[in-house]
Length: 193
Image 1: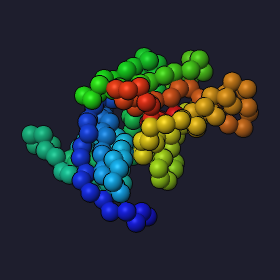
Image 2 (image 1 turned 120 degrees about the horizontal axis):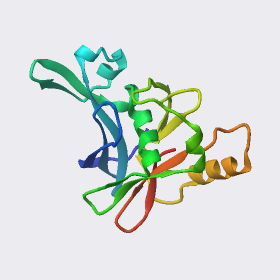
Image 3 (image 1 turned 180 degrees about the horizontal axis):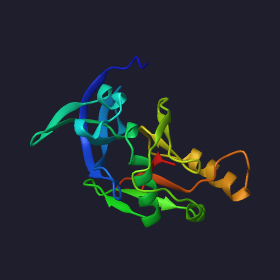
């Protein structure tokens, strides 16, 4: 844990993730910690009770929601099907989602993406939920690593994965694309690999 005092916490923005089966949104949470502003990624989704979501979705719920007679909760989209497949679909489109601060969420595919097929709404398992990243295994072909703490600067994991893919290193999964949060000045923070 951190020993620094947490000041204000704000919702920076919420944007819909293109190409998802469920309504999945990416949110940036800003927290003033130790005199600096830190940013965190929170993928969000509404899980209605009639969809029979897994128990962990309710355990991670932020709030309850109602749509007419339907009742559900707003929860971490990483524990529901559709997030990883949506990331792959947005990579295929080379999507750029503009943000209100003049930045964007940039989906940058690699040539290896063509070798991968992920069906819309494909089930995913949260294989690793360590901080500050979590991995979603979608099929035997794809794993998506989410970076919850977004720090602008060198994207070392992306560069390493790209280099290992280019070399054909057999003991590391090939990089099919990278997702970054770019600010108005052009700085980048990793969101997903």
